[in-house]
Image (spheres, helix red, strand yellow):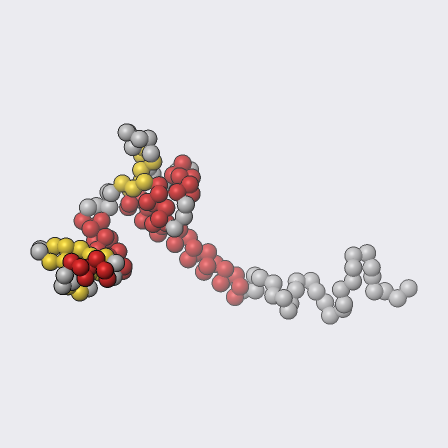
Amino acid sequence: MRLATTPEEIRTSARFAIQGYGKTYELTEEEFAAALRAADCVSDDSRALTTGEAAEILHVSAKTVARLLDSGKMPFYRNNGTGHRMVKYRDIVNYQRTVEKRHHALTTARALASDMGGYDSTDNKKGSSSEEELPVGVNNRAD
């Protein structure tokens, strides 16, 4: 983070800028994301987002978020004025953590299964022998 010197410099070079206590600060994307997370902590993560905004956070489509909400995977409410689905930021983050934990558990399980020989390799197919494989219905007996 660095202190910007002029407003013109901010408009031309900064991706993110915040102002406070009479100063303007230029931020990187990571610093800006950290500032948003800190602000959300202070606000108890109760900020309501639309399905489109939730989709951006989760890196999925708005339709996918709508399906997640309708299936009960995340709590939501409908905006009284518009009827749009609204979901709280903290619920999005909790869902994201749940998905990441599940992904980690599945990755660990796959690695364990592989280490225990649970997957066939191309060199050692299950049930193969040293004999050449023949088409179905053909045997290698000499009659």
